[in-house]
Amino acid sequence: MIESRKIYTLLIVVVAMLNMGVAVAEQPTISARFSKDSIEVGDWVEYIIDIEKDRTTEIGVPIFGGNLTAKEQKEEAQAKLSMSTYEEYDEDIFELVEDYPLDTIKVEGRKLHLRKRYMLAVMETGVIPMRPAILYFDKNREVPDTLYADDTLRLSVERYMELDTTLFLKADPTSEQGFGVDRELAQSMLKDEGIYTQKNLPFIFAEIKDYAIYGTIILILLGLLIWWLVWYIRNKWQARERIVKPAPKLPPHVVAIKALDELKNRKLWQNGKHKLYYSSLTEILRVYIDGRWDIGALEMTTDEIISALRDVKLPHQSRSALIAILRSADMVKFAKATPDAEENEQSFIDAYYFVENTKIVAEVHNEDKRDISFETKIE
Image (cartoon, rainbow, N blue to C red):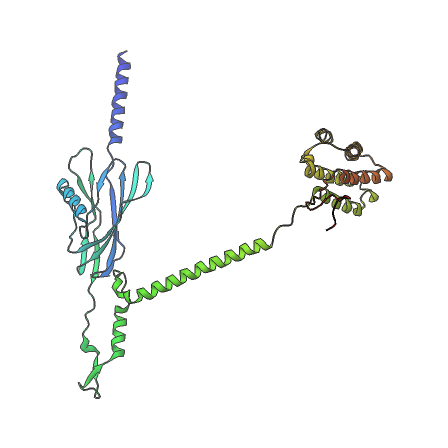
């Protein structure tokens, strides 16, 4: 009994130690980089911080206060009061252009891979060092810790080229001053120094305001042209659909008579193809029955067709002829019977007259028709 209690106590201690190990989250890891190694003063550069942390660990990212609103400045001041070790970068060197939201790049169990991005404008020249850092909050401490990256980043910021306009002058006896501008030399120096190809500068609308009106007019005209093309093509297509109408569906008896004529011309039983002949003949009748009385005869057996037609008003001779054709066809298809020529001809004739005697006859109504009698006056 004592031994079992010792074992039970030991298990409780082990479980408690395991729970303590799970509760203690690993320290986050960070790495950072600039999108470029070197830029010119005033240009933009992207600053990227990659963070790996446990789900339970809270972190704080750096604040650049260059373009903050009044509300954001108030939140920043409160953050600084509660985080005494917060790392704030020099606003005189970096000016915030855009602060992107914190993104979750990947999730691996309890570990989150996060990315924080800033777009910064650099206002100083020289080699600027930056030690990437974040804040993280350990459950066992009330004050957050500052976590630094292993390496210090360095951004090289170059000055704009200073132009000495006297370099572009040359002697010109024809000028009143005795000198003039060497345009070829000026063009060459500007091009070689890259003044013509500066990139990543902020977009200034005033530089293209003279072209805005013309661009707007062109866009409006282009939109109208696209709208007209869509309208024209749609109307053309609709007109084509109105002209090309599908042919009207033929009455069932017309389809059946046409199919019987084609069957007769094929001369199947005359060439010994009795099974194909009777299969084709009964299929024509099944299609006719389906169209004439809306009975699914194509999927029915002979007995099912006969049963379905019991409630249909048919001439007695036509009903008997249909039953005889279907029975003969079953004998040929399943019992391999071989009817003689007279029976084959009779089956075709019976099928033809079955269609003719049961087809729908359209009644012709003449509203202007009058009964003529002796009393009708001649006008």
